[in-house]
Image (cartoon, rainbow, N blue to C red; front, side):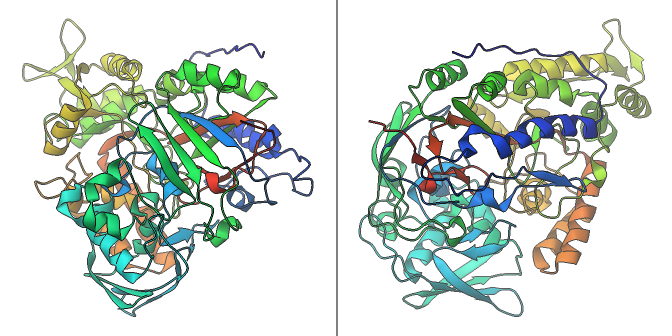
Length: 585
């Protein structure tokens, strides 16, 4: 057995660029020479996978990561673990990160992104867009059925879009993504026409995401509550059993034959079954993988990443999700003291994000000081240093904001008031109390007192949408399009009693709104690059949240698990192509 050893270094004076070179040199190189890519008897002709590359500050993964290299061997059961249960399989009703890969097991989407991020066919064979950008006409496949026998057709698309935006669905994500959608109609059985109230350049991109997958229209119309625990999709697997907080099992659908063309997979999935177990304890996920009790874990513990890499029987993949990086804190820009941008920027620059990354990521996370993931289309690396960790700059900003005096405890004061705030959070694996305590410590050094207010998730969520907080702990927003900036920071995304908007910092800025709105209406790539670059710059000036590190998805598996490719939208595993190079029960 490989002994697990690791060393957590102290704080180091390294630049973002140097840190990036170190990390990419380790785990990106692994992607090109890991045991999972060694040829077996069934894959002797496969070429070694190239590593991901960073060119001019932008990360890209090789196209071979997203499609099958050679056909796999059918059969077997994949035993997988994951940290959390989503609580429902109705992907339209939640924003849970597990939907990124779980949705691809049960469901299909209307379209798919290709290896470069352009839109490609899936259930829609082709589409036409009107000259004014408000009418999309989809030409659909005529050979697709849901697992209950219902045909996939134009009416199925209409019913699904209505379900996404139905207030009864209580969608915090899908409804917002299709907000410009006004109505749809079936031109004929396999032609669907969607009308938007205004041009929306990200419309096709968002339809490619797993949260906007197609559910059986019969189930939506006749028994929508059953979707939560007995979902009916058209995907490569069918749910066989589900026990809340314990696990789920999926069986292969034998007549499946409509995987996205980009994946180069034909016919049904290779695996006969997937047995998924919910294992909240990270050490148990690692030990069960090490002992061979599980073949795959969808939440590989970062503290064990070095040991997994060193073990020739295991393989680790660390992938950066597109969209928005992880935030250490989000500021309520309408509440004192964060209605002053100087205080927001000061606290952001006072937080040692490299230290945070080590607390939770053990060297696996790439630190961030800007607002768009490094592999997102139209990412501009010009602003990577704009909000870098700089305690001296933070001190100057607080002095300028009038918080130049300190009391006997070292906390800054102004007009007799202490610079003391409350951080609202709920304990979860992505934002454990250890991270909150580290933020609290960094703030204290800058003269800012942070009190931790730890509440159950339901209460935290309620107050989050109501804007009833000063500081909100943690959070990331994955999206396969830079329009994720609109979702988080445009004033139209501020939560109301009718909208579960994601601009929970309640940021209102006319300049940013104009840039993001125009980007939604534009289809010219050069103009989009200009608009999104300006928006990224503006965000570093407004500082609605403190970016900390990229949103990584880290998975690990036994070396006999072959054929793993990644979803082009989410950079998470796509199990249709996975197969086992070892006899399993």
